[in-house]
Image (cartoon, rainbow, N blue to C red):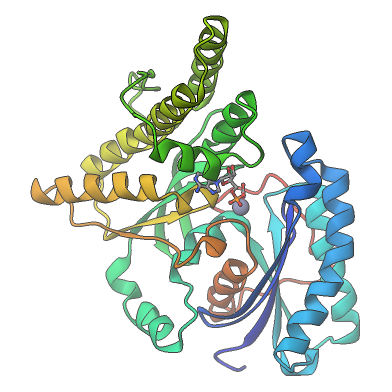
Amino acid sequence: MIKNPLILAIDTSCDDTSVALTLKNQVISNFIASQTQIHQPFGGVFPTLAKQAHQKNLPVLINAILKKNHLSFNQIQALAVTYGPGLAPALEVGLNYIKTIHQEFPHLKILAVNHLQAHLLAVLASNNTDKSQEKLINLKNLLPALGLIVSGGHSCFVKIQNPTQFYLLGETLDDACGECLDKVGRLLSLGYPAGHIIENLAKKGNAKKFSFPLPMTNQKNFNLSFSGLKTFSKNLINQLEKENKLDQKTITDFCASFQHSCFNHLIYKLKKILLTQQFQSLWLGGGVASNIYLRKLLRSTLKTYKQKKITNVKLLTPINKKLCTDNAAMIGVASYFLWQIAKFSNIEKLDRNPCLKIEK
Ligand code: KG4
Ligand code: ZN
């Protein structure tokens, strides 16, 4: 069995179709066909339309990536695919497609990847051969790591024992962080998805203008909750509208204060975890991970805790925005670690698991 396979990876878990070519943790190509325009009118993902778009885009992307790299399936050793969590009709498109490819090219090994684990392993991805090598060599100095996933569908803290062993420490009991940003953005008619729009508006606003409640402070666990912040926002927006105060300046102040409240909730729980457990690094993944203000808050928290000699954890983030939001490169990187432990899937039995947990 070859040690470092060339892998074609596919992600159709939600609203973006993505295919990638990876070698170990090195990203050779990472193609993404966004469906933002399709779902924008609905203010969220419409599953049937997502499925249709995946069916149309996937064969086109696969042909394009092979052509660009002058490759055929005969030169590839494995197919990696997201089998969960995600939207059932969307996941099915990826799985059905690899079944068709496998019929024609049965030499291909099948690697079924957990999308959540992949969001965290995205911090190991690199475009540069030397840097990817360096990250793999340093891996043992980074583990155990604390993982924080903040995406449109998930928000959780995870202990990463090694790249194939994950333990859930706490998760949102209701909305995900990105979902909360998107829903509140919708109340302000900011457009979908709203996370990066709120981030940009917040840059010009005063984060201290409005004070928001800090959720879950009376609970010792590391779970999260964003629905209270959403309801508080809704009431505040209604009140400001009624008083005719919702002008552009107030919207920027609101965005700064609201964004800060969402991230402050993450920081509060992060501090609790760091006080009770030792980690070597903090891995940040998911769409919200591209937010610069969040990264700044995390870095300054870690710096303070380092000064207090509580922890010496350093923050690792994906090298670019494309690796934060949904993408197939992270699926390819995650699958390399499955290849190493020979965790191959039987194509006949392979099925989607829309509610797959991080630990599986
Ligand atoms: O990881 P992702 O592409 O999809 C899921 O797996 O859920 O994350 C999408 C989420 C959306 O909620 C979007 O608003 C949020 O990531 N997002 C951001 C930023 N860019 C994307 N949130 C805050 N700041 C950003 N710059
Ligand atoms: Zn995702």
